[in-house]
Length: 296
Figure (cartoon, rainbow, N blue to C red):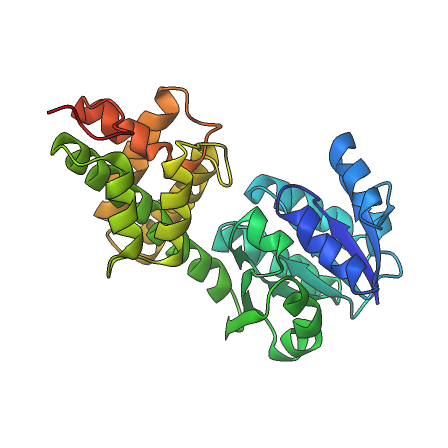
């Protein structure tokens, strides 16, 4: 297939590479020079603007950072899109912004799928992402072989904006898990438990999940390099709280997680991984990191 791709960042690039590896012809638009170079090295050709990657494409995929970027890029891309083309957006954005894109796609005769992904850049490289998809069922069936290339777990959840809400549901759970781990680690450290003992028990207990295990491994090295940053988490928490307000659903836990994340931002951790919530909990608890056995 001829595929257009817009957005070759930390997630978009390995996802795009899964298509070139499968033999698809991919044309990429990416404004950042370094990312453009990496896309070319991964086998893509380079387009000059969003409309150019859509011309003659069977499908276009976008991987974008936020609502504003989607609302700028999608209409520009649709200006070059042939009728009947598949448009698959994998971004984490609000249902409201997505609904505006849906109207524009319908006016252009383009089949629009909301297909945000759950996972990390490492999982994207391993082709182990989970995709949550909503939109017309026939478009989903047509796009499923492509979407499955960046992860076999593909969940169809409805005909409209359900995938957007489902991604926010998952990210609320991710943010709450990080806050929970941070407070639990601060309590355990204050109680004299060695740092690695805390993490080992967490990762082998009944409470362990794939996320807890990944973050425990990261924290064992005190590694806060960003797989998903505190600043990105702040954006998603804003979307989550707005969605709750629109739906009339109180989200007091999400509000608290947002405030805890704001402390991390205020202390300069915006570009670090969201598990830097551990540093915030240590700050609030007045604890120093315990990497070895406590002194008797």
